[in-house]
Amino acid sequence: MEILAVDDEAIMLANLVECIKNVQPCANVHEFKKAGEALEYIKEHRVDVAFMDINMRQINGIELAKTIKSYRPNVNIVFCTGYSEYMADAFDMYCSGYLMKPITAEKIKGSLENLRFPVSETSECLRAICFGNFDILYKNIPIVFKYEKTKELLAYLVARNGASCTNNEIVAAMFEDDESHASYFRNLKKDLMDTLREIGCEDLICASRGNIAVNVNMLKCDYYDWINSSSGELGNYTGQFMSQYSWSEYMMAH
Image (cartoon, rainbow, N blue to C red; front, side):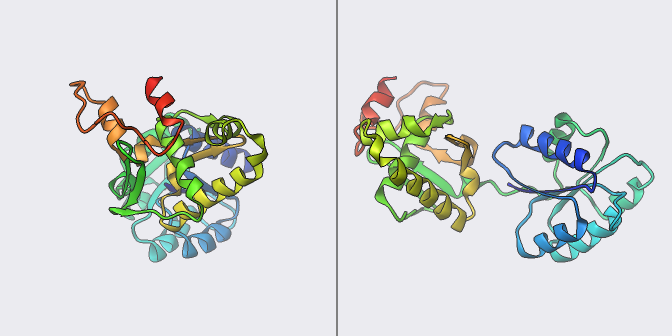
């Protein structure tokens, strides 16, 4: 999810961004203190939701929202303000929310759950096949990475089912404890993110310093369907799990 955060007060902006990330840790949050810079950004980039203050020095937030809508009609506008008198104007332009400060994670969560324009789920487009050989498909077409090992990196993250993995842990599994591949691994991570970004699916990966995980909510996966099955049936599991990778046997055993 691509989220814009606009507030000309640094402390308020920092709190807004923190609350958004608490609710949507895998979202790409683009923060701006200057309304003009936010407008220039949205002219060139997709944005799903824009959280913005109203009473700003450079431009009134209502006017900014109207201009943004002229470029991106389906952007969800959520106003974050300490003033109630703008509420009628905000809803006249069909905003997705009007939050009174102080902003909290609970208020952000409520807004994101009730957007006027639903954000399309990447899971409808991305599908992982884990039983048998691993493959990852976008709109039913296999994704091709620059390096073959990049696909294995993604397979490992999918197998971990959303658990955060350290770089060292992944290197140990993929290269059998040979730490000399650390620089190559950085290339694999870059290839993974670059390739996913090209198809608009970068939200699949949650990365922080030294750690990386897959966002399971962004992915349809036969393995996830199996482990989440209330019936406990094996379904299409035939005893083979990501069989092209040596570490996969250990994964299923644990």
